[in-house]
Image (tube, rainbow, N blue to C red; front, side, top):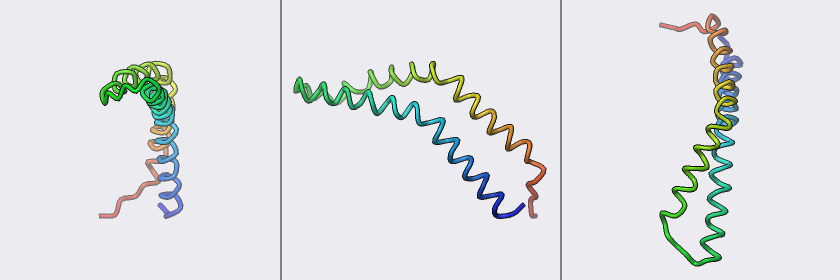
Length: 91
């Protein structure tokens, strides 16, 4: 196991995490921005107004993007488990 292999695995893990979390974070950001614009135009400054729409939007996006997210995570886990024989542990 070389340092290049470890860096490649870490890089792929970080890219996988960013790819999987991006749709949910983007939807949450978009809904938060829309609610903020609504609050600014109507001058309703209720702190808890943003929580329910964000939760609903993220739940809906989890239903939509869930299969793709699961497939991406399973393929990453398959790659890790396929390369498990390259890991040598020093005792």
